[in-house]
Length: 307
Image (cartoon, rainbow, N blue to C red; front, side, top):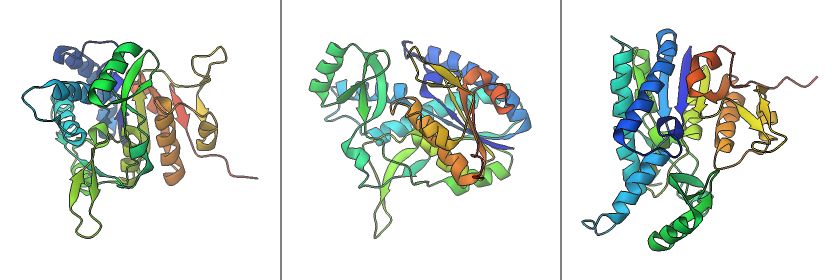
């Protein structure tokens, strides 16, 4: 079975953890342990988030006195692809002796006229108290929004139209290679309508929506979205909270899950299932093997046909 796996940024750097290299290496070890059993039996394409990491690099770039201006987000996204991809590739190499593994820096085409550029929603960086977030926003011209435990920077997140290196990923898969790609949703670029020339843009593409698009184009059988909760919850964090273990795309969308967290994951799963007739699931990293075998997580499957 061909499985595209989307790793949440919080699977690599948990909330409130120090963003040290050693901390991320420990978390990557946990990722390898969770995914190695699946890699023995299936073709895997691994994508990952980069919210905490790109936010860290952006803050460092803003504060660097040697720079006349901060690095743009698309270049910082490329840096996180290389960094996180290297950590994943080396650790999976040790967990899967003899398996060919490659990290591919990829670019995702978006529309320059996407309305998302005027409505930043994608969380990046660490969580701050409201007062601190306000000071940083005024100092750097950031947009901020409330996250579950505090306030964070938000940036534009345009919809992905195509991962430009999809054909290369397909060839690597056919040669038996485990591919790590589309990290952080891919480096966001727009293409000139006349020449096709590519230009990076100040945005971060949602990695789950990119993973769904990539899974569709690669004709994957299964889209697995891994995060830091065991499943989707209806009425999350309220007294009416209920786990959702099985849902159709329409049922998932009716829950109106929040944009900044579970919403894009649910939309990615629903979109993949609707477009392909395949299966998707959302659940916890440590339960990856159990989720694929139907024993954990939220399974998203095609809706029943009308009678």
